[in-house]
Image 1 (cartoon, rainbow, N blue to C red):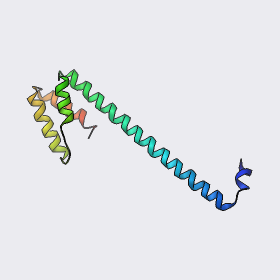
Image 2 (image 1 turned 180 degrees about the vertical axis):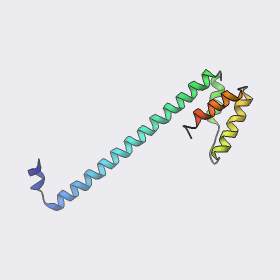
Image 3 (image 1 turned 45 degrees about the vertical axis):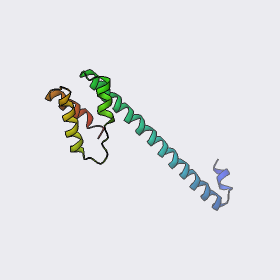
Image 4 (image 1 turned 120 degrees about the horizontal axis):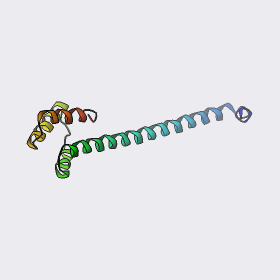
Length: 106
């Protein structure tokens, strides 16, 4: 294999090296994006399961998860979530558990 590359002109070897590095970079980027999506879905599924175990209905879970949160700080999001969970009748310990479970998403 070494003789194959050594017989190539140096300019071609350099171009081949650049193309290989580019392709490797693309593969790493795609794999990282895929892994991040899988992890995000896993966290969301864990959060939904936790909410179901706490007695929230599927409609309540959907409402909590589909609330737009763009442009808000983490503390504003947590305050709004706490308010919604209090409205649903959760006690302080349950709210604390939900908030701590959600911190892995933020």
